Length: 336
Length: 271
Image 1: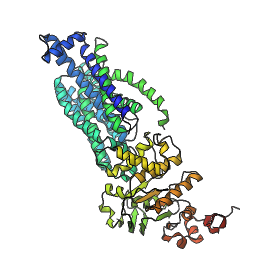
Image 2 (image 1 turned 90 degrees about the vertical axis):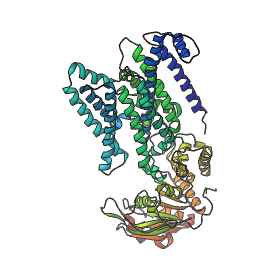
Image 3 (image 1 turned 45 degrees about the vertical axis):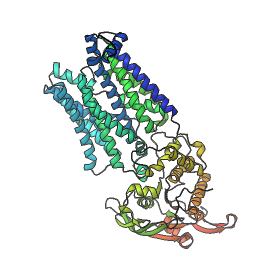
Image 4 (image 1 turned 90 degrees about the horizontal axis):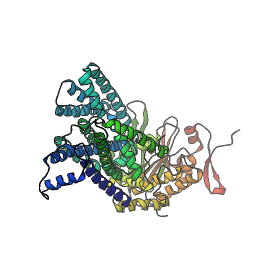
């Protein structure tokens, strides 16, 4: 199997990611000089004497955690979008399909209205997202109909319900503070990210990404449909279940930290397929790196373009929607 | 043309259907106590009117549906006790239509036939892609191996489906109306391949709407008439004008035609 195209693309993306990482590390309100950053890094590593403590603080405690988390969130959202598209045989769906985003929004809103801390808000958002997916997964069991369509419709029902719940909460929320917080949370931001967020989501990222990488070929088979997948000997309920659990954990973790960010889970997998074809053994790793790169660029723009922080969903929307239109144009034969 | 990718020791393999009944969710019984046997090297055509249960029977043979009573024995073992993976190593299913969502290449599609032979976290390696390529070569379509399978003709797609079941290295092949959407030339091409496969030891069961194909394939027939009566046996013993009338409700004749040196099943002139 000719892997050179894949290896070349993967290498280029990794290199781009590293370069963007350093550029992003050097950009900010305090100092835009990459030499300052290099000095700081070297002195931390013990290769150079004397460091600027303010710069050190900026690089390691302000910028770096945010940069790392934005890469992780980008990777996680893109990956879950890619595998959902494979499992549900539909290149036009996003990770919000099963209700994670609406559930997480309700969880976050609850925390905001109860005056909880940021960390508590992240936890309730995470739990809210998982609760929504669990209900979505439970409905087909209740109706004794486990096929894909049932799961999708179930997701629509649950998303709709949680959205209404969120609307009630917005309606009774205190206008100036609570409502504003809820709305801004929904627009997505990495502004308050610190080191401990990395600790929280890295294990989820490593475990779920590894599992999904290992199952990536099986996603190809699932995308043929239940009949064919079963005739090829696959235990579809089990494999689909594992994949949905991993993808949901990835989405819920991301959303709980950064708020809901649209478009990335829909567009990046498409870009990946355009670049490397539809074989998921290649799409999955490419999507992870592309998502990290994309989110890093978006978040860097969000904090540097103007003096105020631009919410992430605004940027992903302005970039993602036209990009998606372009992708659909290129792939218009696929849309039935 | 050597098609076989069968493993060695393939002689007396058998799919035995014993008193199988089936209904969807406890409603009307579609299959009523059906019994017959498929041996390796045999071709069995399932004939019957629309909606009578031909495809249902076929799916039961692949354990894609479970009989409500009776059992199916795969080489002597009760299928209900065998897990899907093992069944997939022995029985292949060629669906009537494929509705692709993504445009995998033909080779990527055929290599998925090796799924029952790979571990759950395994990816196919070079040797597996080689086997998939060989399957394409056996039917003479390796030249389209890199084309997206969404952009090949219906005839080529049918060949690709058959290639995948060859790559699956099964003993029994189940085909749901393999010629339904093919032009006449491709129909005969597929029938030729089916006959070759049977000669090489595959046991093949197919559903068809064309009784003349039965006469071309010269295998056994499993027939449902319009009253859901089931008949099974050699085509020459069972198939006659009366049975055909009871299946399709119209007059069909079986006659010997010298120019093609065979019996044909044909409709009389429309007045």
